[in-house]
Image (cartoon, rainbow, N blue to C red; front, side, top):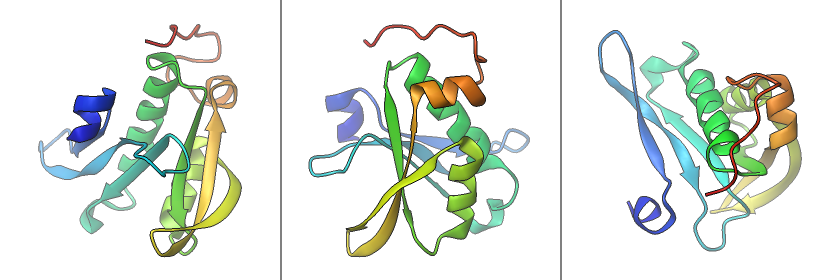
Length: 133
């Protein structure tokens, strides 16, 4: 909640369109000490493998780059979380490093605005991003 109040962004609920059932959450974090502006996602096990994480993350990245004026977004992913690694790679994110974070070894995946808008933006490669708020 603090992110929404102090920073104007945070985590959204992810709902299944057909049922309105809450299936997870996705959004942006960047508290003090964080390695960068992060997009993270968590889905309930029964919602894995349905494309929800990729669809929601792609929309969130589009929002970050076209509406929020962000230049770079990271995703911190545990080295053994193969499903999230696949989601990051589908989005066009690439490994930018590895670190220990909150007691776990994680990959730092990342993508720039130019990489995203040139490849898989909802708005398409010819979309002109709005200036940062």
